[in-house]
Length: 232
Image (cartoon, rainbow, N blue to C red; front, side, top):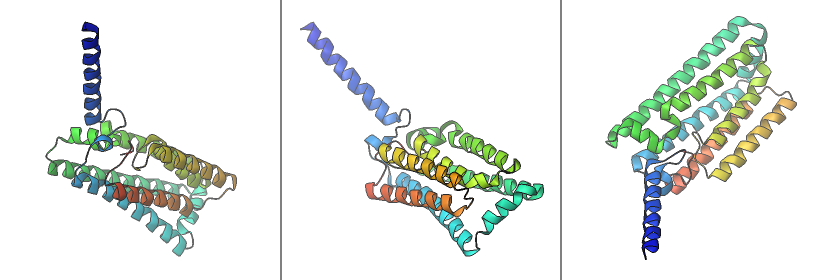
């Protein structure tokens, strides 16, 4: 009899631990996986994905309309230090503005939800916890800069595809089921290898891939009214 009571208590303890983990979003998991998320939080996720889609598509259109002017400027930087420096500084400024805008959007929504910012980030935007996204972007920016200053500008386009695949593998930014994220990540890596093999420096292609994935993720988020996996 005592043994049965111990087993029943153990089952209850396990159930309690599971509920705590589900609520706190342990690891990469978020509360959206197991419970409901607020309309404001879901709207914020959609805004982030929508902004990413718009910016990527806008760059693609700019490239095609201007006859690949940005790619030409990138290739020009191979032998021009001033162009290299300007390009790196512009990229740094753009990333800084986007990161600040993202953080402000999250902070405003957390205040609307009357929740502590750290708790809100851990629950719904785990990739922002401990400045994870910003440190990851910094590493990617350093790699990008090294390629530019090393005169390997033609490798930037494949590198952008690798970065997109990496975000899919890590579960950052995009919202998909885990299997789809992994599958899309593998596709991005294969496309990067193909573009590298073909020595194709065109920037519109990785931007189009990114925009398509971001738009698909936005559709998924709207369809399910919140993510079904951990890729918050």
